[in-house]
Amino acid sequence: MIYWDHNSTTPCAPEVVEAMREFWNEEFGNPSSSHIMGHRSAVAIQRAREQVADLANVFPPEIVFTSGATESNNLLFLGILLSPSTERKRIVVSSIEHKSVLEPAYLLKGYGYEIVKLPVDRRGETKVDAAKKLITPETLIVSVQAANNEIGTLQPVADLAEIAHENGAYFHTDAAQMFGKLPLDVQAVNCDFASFSAHKMYGPKGIGALFVRGGPRRWPWAHPFLGGGQESDLRPGTSNVSAIVGFGAACRLANDFLKENSAYLYQLSEKFIRELKVVEPQVIIINEINSSLPGTLSIIFPGIPADLLIAHCQEICISRASACNGAIGASHVISEVLQNSCLEESVVRVSFGRDSSPDDFGAFFRILKKIRSGV
Image 1 (cartoon, rainbow, N blue to C red):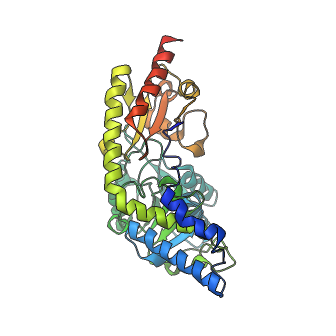
Image 2 (cartoon, one colour):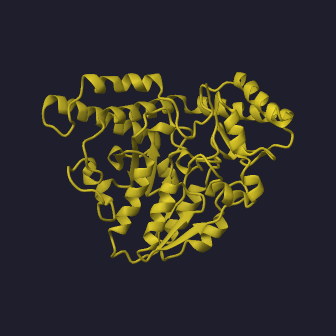
Image 3 (cartoon, rainbow, N blue to C red):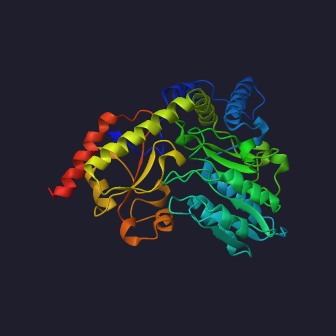
């Protein structure tokens, strides 16, 4: 099986699995307990917190472990929802955010908040000039992802954070796709909040984190979850020790091999496009490689419905869009970027990983030729 859907999830790295193994079978103590086994688990969590913080260039107490970026995003908006005394009522998001930002944001619309969507250009990049007009002193928070999960486009988050802060607003970025794939200095971006997921970067599924500037004691809203006191009472509940340890191990690996992996994936993408255009001269690449996540391509195959192409790829895993959007139909991201319903149905996402090889290209090209020939 050829797996070209690394933006949805990556395989758990062997080194990560090995780091987690001890906490499946041997060190099973609850880290909230006062006995020695609990203490050892608590020490392991602290080490993982330091590893995640190191990759993000933040302080360890500013990392709050969650089940993933989706929960981190929801935690943020639920906190706002439970704080009705907030005077600012404008929430600004990009039009191509992940559903875990858009849907909680629109939930707030029913409680008197104004939701403003920032437009994007043909490559899916948020328009900074528009942001300068739409982010106003009435804005409470701006949320724009660091890199789009479907087309890979990198967003000008540092510029947007500056505009938000000039207007007295908070800035949040869903960095699930970028974290561990490209350098992400949260301090340099000047985020107030950032969301991460382990399964996008060779870590386990079901674990992630929320960065809170200054730590949970600086959380400005109500706590949506109650009971237990874990994660400084911002995300209480028994800690998933093995997954947290795996997340930390994945961050350590990313720190060691970030430049090497990203360079390889950029080269692989360039080679794939060169060879693809020989087979499919009419193909259109939506995103630009040099301003996108390494290894991520959003491709239009004119005249070939994406669902048909995916159905023919029995041994190759590619996708239409984010796994969270479902498998059928064009996503809101593609609709916002293309503004062309005819082309929307022919968009496929290919996202390579560090184990991807140019040796696999031929199998995909043969499928394309078969479809074009009508065989």
